Image 1 (cartoon, rainbow, N blue to C red):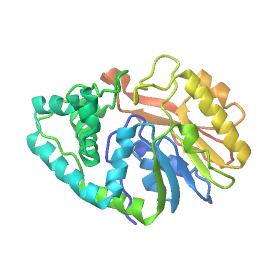
Image 2: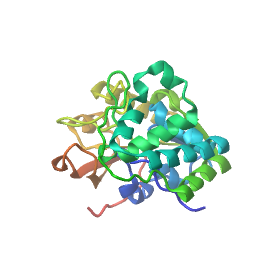
Image 3: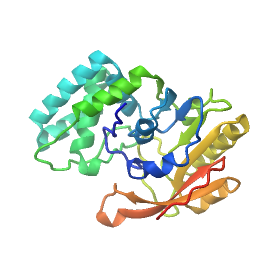
Length: 284
């Protein structure tokens, strides 16, 4: 099957280093779990026959649900065509502010919400997904005169992947998402990253701070005890080094392409942590 690429730009996306991640994937596994699926680069590369993918961001997972459903998929693409035709600075803010009226927003058809999510991602500043404490999307316009919202053939490949394989879609807490993982399964965690200074983690209204990093480490250890093969990506911070000191560290330099200014972008050192041994030397 042809391989897809992410349909949205997502902070921490793994498309640029997916080849290095693949080199560390276990040769054999039963069910693939990805509790922070984001744009889905790893999912599309692995093309698992059986998987559970999850993201706490309900709007993102709604897009996956609509891409999977044939009727919603067609309606979503039709809606995206409308967004492309009507796009302007004023129109962007009109669509962005739909979630300010929660009652009205919650009544929107799934495919309209999905199209809104993709449109905002393509039209907003630097492809950033950020919400405030009220769970309202608050990224300013990217001031683009024209927006291309989707690649039809690419979404078609994702539609086939989700339908021709046993792939379960969830939108829940990461711990809940892996509750049924068992010996022989492979779990890949790509959470909002830790930082020794500051970090962007407002993908949901609750954020993802130090305590969440610690809870994730406990889940990692529990999965290890269950006999799962577990891999996790993060920044090489003091906290991460301490939390996973008993496991295997692999280092890779990756581009960081989402930030409020160019000085916040560039190359950063990431770690890929596993609870199993698979020797790999990275050329940084």
